[in-house]
Length: 65
Image (tube, rainbow, N blue to C red; front, side, top):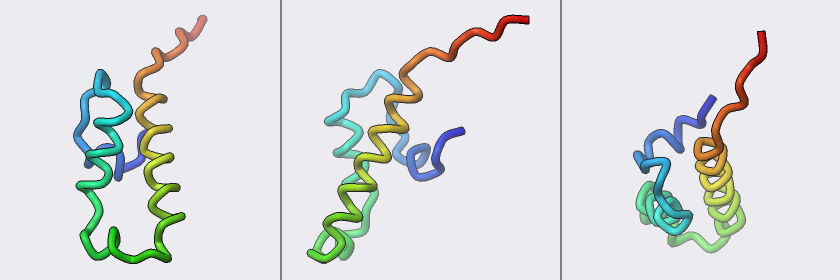
């Protein structure tokens, strides 16, 4: 199941990692970007969005009956 924050980015599964990070940056409020103490949290958010994107790109393994 995908993270709701990732779904709000509205990026296609063919998008590059750079495009995902750009969309994630645009999704954050400007005040959040300005606070230095939130830097680690922002990096964690970007990594989570990239992880979600990679999971959506990999094909699901077929289930055997």
